[in-house]
Structure formats: C-alpha cells, structure tokens
Image (cartoon, rainbow, N blue to C red; front, side, top):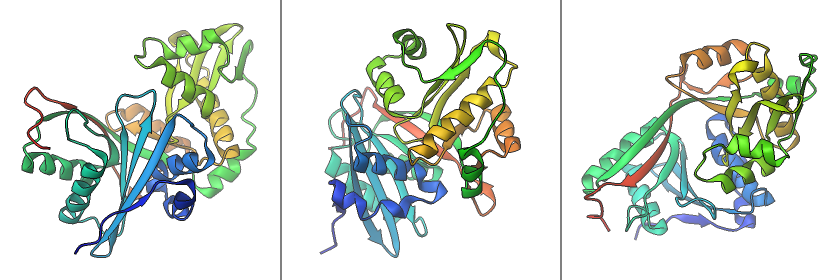
Amino acid sequence: MAATMKAYTTQNALKTVVENFRKPRQLFMYHPIQFEINGTFPTTKTALYSKNLNGTTYWMANMTNVYEKKDRQILTHDGKFREEDFLAVFDEFCKANGLFAGSKTPSTVAEKCYTKAIEKYMTKNKIAAQVQNKSSHFFAMNESQMFKYRHYNDGELPDGYSINIPDSVEDVSQIVGSSINAKLVEEKLRRFPSLCVRKGDELAGFISSETHGAFAHLHVFQSHRGKNLGEKLEIGASKMAIENGIRPCKFIDTTNSFFLEKAKKSKMMDVVEANGTPLVFDQNVYSPASNYGAYQ
C-alpha cells in the first residue's frame, strides 16, 4: 500500500521542518510556518502536509483564517518537479482539506508549473471553476543585503514628513479603503511590518505585509510622489521585518515593467531565479463556475 501524506499540524511538528524552507524560492512557505510556531497571527491556523515520490518531496500548506471565507494553499517542492507525481499528491491534499468539493475552492500561491498542473487536474476531474490569476516575480533580500539594511541610515525625510506605524483609526480606515475584508486588513496592519508616511496629519503613503510574509500594497498618494517616500517606506518596513525574524521579500506583477526595472536597479533585493531565469509565481483564486460540482 502506498504511503499517505505526512501531516504537521502542531507547533512542535512544524518546528521539525521549518528550517527546510529558508531558500529564497520557498520563503512564502517559511514565513507562515514560522508565524504558526510563534503565534504571530492567532486568527490563522496553518497545517502542513508532505509526501515524497521518486525522490522529490512535495510540500503543501493549508492556511485557514477566521476573517477569510477561503483557505489559502501554499505549494512547493524539494527536488525535480514531476507533474504526474505532484498531481497524485495534490489529489490526496484536496481530499484531506475538502478542496474542489462542495463550494470549497482553493486560493493558491505557487510556481507557474503548479498552475499548469492544476489546470490539467481540473480538466481530468471535470471541475468547472473560474480562475482569477495574478502572476508575479519574487524578490528577496540575501544575507549581505539584510546586513546592510538592518542599520541603514537612508537620510532625512523631506520637510514636514514623518514615518511611523499605522496606529490611528483614521490611518487604518484610509488604508483599508473599500476593502471587503476590513477586519483582516486591520489585523495584518497590527501583526506584520507596516508603516505610514504622513505630511503633518495627512496620510501620504503606506506599506503593509501579507500573511505569507511578503510586503504588499506599497502606495504613495499622487500629490506626494517624486520625493523618494516609497523607498523610505520599504527600507523602514525591511528593518521591522528583519527585527522580527522575517526575511524582507515581495511579489511584483510580471506586467508591471516599471516597478520590476526599479526593483532590479535598486539592488535592495534579488529576483528569485532558476537557471538564470526569473521564476514566475502565481497567486490564483479559484471560484465555482455555474456548472461547478461534478467532482466530489
């Protein structure tokens, strides 16, 4: 009989494998497991599963948050990716977590090869689900960059500006804006590296982090641009991340050529590559189509 997946569902069990994921291409797996071990984000429960097939270990995490309707799945591997083997493990993972059953559909973070494989899985099992896709390159600080920015002095802010954490109700409400999940955004601002830049009492920009540890939503409002405030926010958030055991990292959309070029030129983080080519990571949200539900 074939071995079943291993499950790591307690803090002690996760401690035995967390150091495996320090490689740059797996940081978005490393950070949530570390958060689970440390109790960083109490409203999220992260369970990890693994299986070795033909010398490759496939790792799949399922993150449940009380403020989110949909669980998030993080997928990665050690060794050579083989689509057929991955799909065998993925089928087991789906059944263990009730994915693609009833109305429960995944929300995945993984390299592009996983997205292509899941498309075949859906076709084979006659699963009619709509996919909202966001493809990104992944950037992360190396050790020397972390050493540099840990105590980096990036000079004075322009006159009248200040940077601090988003602690006022007004700050949070502006950052949340029209978000359909305000409570989740508020919790992320409170628990993860987040900063605001202000001119006097006016919010000029902000940076926040995602539950997988990467920076998200770096934004400077139009009337305050051209003053290097975005870089100062990112450096400040990086210092906060390093102090809290998080390796600074970020996703940038593959279509955003301006910010991709800016990130490469800044030398603040390295783009994550395989064989000299930047890896593409997909953040996909699957939702039931009208004829969904054939596969149970």
